[in-house]
Length: 305
Length: 222
Image 1 (tube, rainbow over the protein chains, first blue to last red):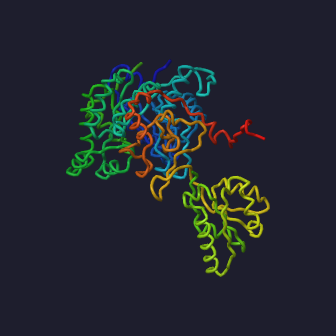
Image 2: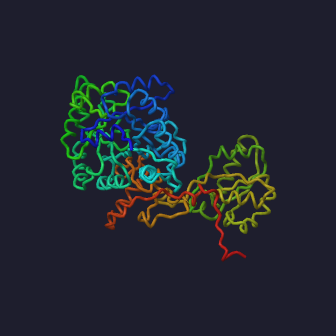
Image 3: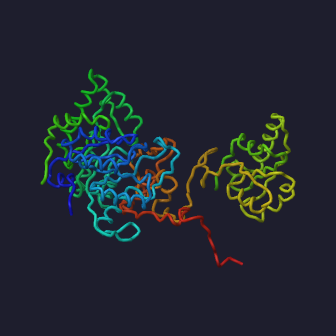
């Protein structure tokens, strides 16, 4: 089987770097290309959100193909919110046919939080079922219902973990379950509460989960005090401690301070046992990622023949 | 019980615009218990409609009556006289009762006076909460008696999702995270390990997704 670049990086033992791109609320290819161009050569793979926060945007798979055309490897996010198992499995095959290998399995924010609050939430599968389904399609060439695929497919299966959601005691076990279901790499929710993340990782490492899947820690550079407050108060499953808010409040140049915080956090994450890489989510601020990667000593990125 | 809430009076009035003689029909079962469509509410609704139409300069004759159970045909006969003399009936029963009325008195229209909302129970005075979606494949044995299909906003079988914080659902701070409750209850019974089994995708064909359902019991058929 052919491996994705992300899989090669993680399996080589190098500290991985992934980026993120939120497709536009338009069908403008050039807008996607503009945002993605900042990430080329700076990250190993770019997550493409799937109608993130339940807001309608260009489809993640279509955007993924545009990135491939630019020589950037996509990591296609796929929620179970908007499609049933028929549509999801069809889209997996479509993504594979278009050259995509990384798929990140996500439940998806509830539709009432987005711009189509009257929509039907599908949730035919849950995120755990999606992970199992991808594994079954790849390893057994079988659909959920038992019918056979006509030919094998290559997939690198990802899942998300949120150490900041509750109940905290259960979160490492939930991660274990996702790995058991078939997740090979994990990307975490944005980390601001480093103390809680370290507590979480300690349990994860004690359980040996970091040896079964590659855990990539989520980082977001804060652009402003408003952004920090918004995340603290409005984003589901997120903790932004007061010391971060205070630090931004006291800074003259908020953007520069946001970048400083991100770089320091990456440096810290590198020292935490079990962390295999960093996922830099600078949606609509992609141009800052090269600077962060450079300052955090993450460049150049490894290449494989 | 089946919980319902009365439609806004304006909506009922709009539906009644062409009519002069109306019967408001209550039901003595669930909608009585949830204080939406029992005898008291039928009388109140009749009075409110009558006053509103009088004020609008288009008086209407409104009678009210309540049958023991609108969802079974044999209980509807007692209302025959009142139904026949009315132009139209407004039912305060759940959607089942309203449809039963339309079928039983097929020559007469029965309009909905309520929105049927869910299967649930009162959790405190004046508060009712959804508990069951009637999915046709009960998992309460696996989830410590707390339904993740009805009470998790995403109907997850392998929850909780990443939006659960401080025991509350991401949809609203007024909604308890069902999976938080399940995890807590499993811990109380020292059974958290049971959650580590990856649950297969749910068979939704036993629910409405398999088409409208029918139960046939050959052993009790005549």
